[in-house]
Image (cartoon, rainbow, N blue to C red; front, side, top):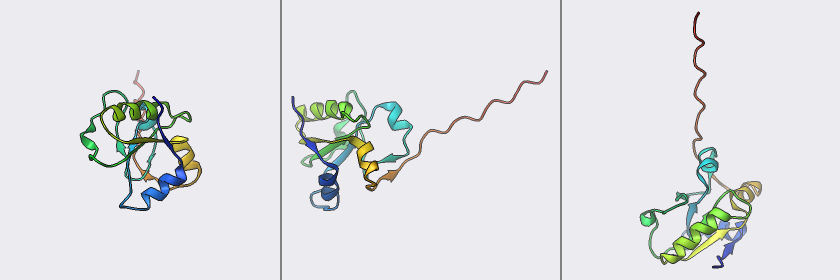
Length: 122
């Protein structure tokens, strides 16, 4: 099944028009998502696997993105959402191309490293 793509410029234009703004879905795999400090503006997190579509409003277009330049995770999610009746496109180049173009992002926290354990006393 072919999945439609959207350019970063076209997505930015849609996000700037509140009446046409799609629901943006972060479809990154667990590790890239957890170790990132940014998401696209207003993104909803739907990881791979069986997505919880209750987070998605009915009747609005969905744009999925990931961190893979080939958009593999976003494409898989888009196929699943399309099967469930959503109109979905995938962001070309994912979050990497979006950030390289210095387009706006929302900050998110990344996991913090645990402090080293104290050395055992002899």
